Length: 117
Image (tube, rainbow, N blue to C red):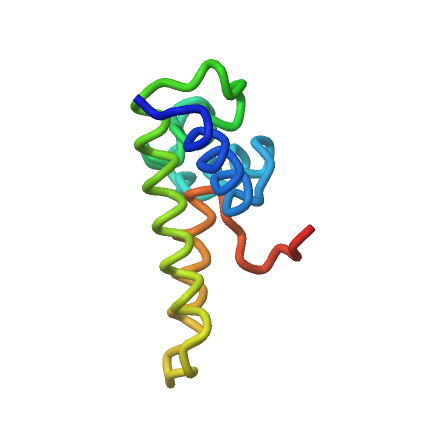
């Protein structure tokens, strides 16, 4: 189990990297999964991790489970490691890769183009 100081730090880190609101993330997950033939039910749209991030955004800190904490740590690590890649020099296919990277991060609730608060 995580102690109170670790939980506070993780909560702050998670909300630092997840810069999309729950409404923005839910809308992105629906758009991301929609295709010309079918659109999933809103509560089933997106990746399992994206859905878990959305559920965490709708919880109070005191209601977090061990599974929530595991996902929060993974999201923080992933977003932080991808942020390091943003500082690398541009490549020829940089625009396409930047778009793919942005979409992957948005599935986790982080929009790299959104200005910092």
